[in-house]
Image 1: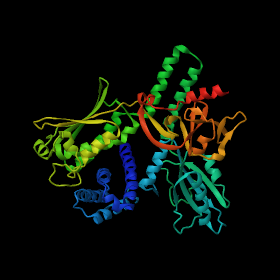
Image 2 (image 1 turned 30 degrees about the horizontal axis):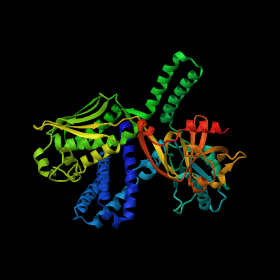
Image 3 (image 1 turned 120 degrees about the horizontal axis):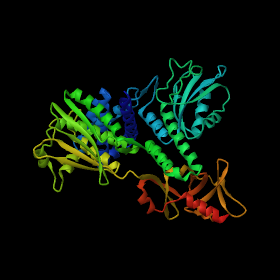
Image 4 (image 1 turned 135 degrees about the vertical axis):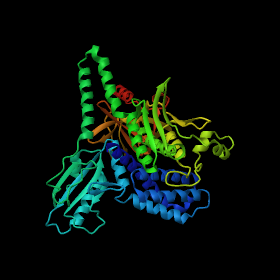
Length: 550
């Protein structure tokens, strides 16, 4: 059941992105039809949506995605009907916004709303549910609710108001959901509005919805489930213990303590390969049962650790390879093996089946000049199936596999046998020792900051720029004067402050700094070796420069 919930959450994350993309596509429909690359991206999106809908038994969504997939394929070849495709995508967009896709207890969230909350949690933000009761004597309850929502939207990301403020309802009692990196008391201060009888602010996790009609929600509240949080707190408490021991200066224990911290940190940012295998087996069993096939599953190398950022792309890769095996490889009975292999500095995931292998004659007949076997079978639109159905035939599954492998920097390769006795796909994983970074422009320089040093990025408020009697510049943030830098140098004059549009707040140990930025460029991930070759801001060196000016 836990794995099914995990797959459902992953599907909602994908569906949320698709919902956002479809909204943008439909807004600029005529221009979109003329863009081949974007049409290819839509093809992949719809195929991915169909796969997830099939697993979660969303029959109507699966059927519409299947029809849309066929129409997109026809439009790519110039023979499709743009109006039919537009209508199908509109229907899919409507389905993604309905409760069938994202029911959470008695409260209903769209895929987009669920995705926003999930991403906020991954960034370390809190998600709060606010239950509000308006004074019964207040004649304009809806206006009062509107004022509360406006106050909150000014400082926080309000996800949903129930009931919606665009409906004609009694707002004696209503609920808001929001995300923020501020503390709960900041939310309460923002709700300082007259004629509110009662407010309850509580952390929110999916599954903590109110029971009944909500009338007792203010007096009988469910205890927030603490399992995910308690696990993380236990790990942080362990790190705190190691740090306290290190502060005592016992040199003989130092190596053991550092090793303990590394072990805990590894558990926070990596996940064992076996967790993906469990999900893949669940997906396989469900689809095999639907197709009337008997397929065994074997998992090897489950201790290999994977970056958490790879989990979703790899999950989708395995889903597509399983569909491919059931359609093109395994006929009635067979076996699929998922293996993690490490050695000689390489880390490879091997997906194998013992089915009938590749139809080399058909593949070679369709191959283009200079194309490898892998290039041909991963080419968008290529398929050896004579008929397209909900499982295969569109020529998008393996194209999606390669696309997802590339998104995590992995290399896809193929092992096959001329006698048709099975097939293996190899996914060679990149170096996991990578760091998230933010790159920004200051004058004519591109500077890089490791993301874990960044506390906030803000639009520059020039009224908060300060200068002391010694001509040193600061930025007033949250009541604290932070030393102000231009790149890795303290700000020396007014020119850079006139030009800058943003300020980046950094924290390092107990220190905080402010960096001026003309433009925020991009977020990316680089290896530590690549970072050393960039012009990057090291907060430790900023402190040295502050010390020299004292």
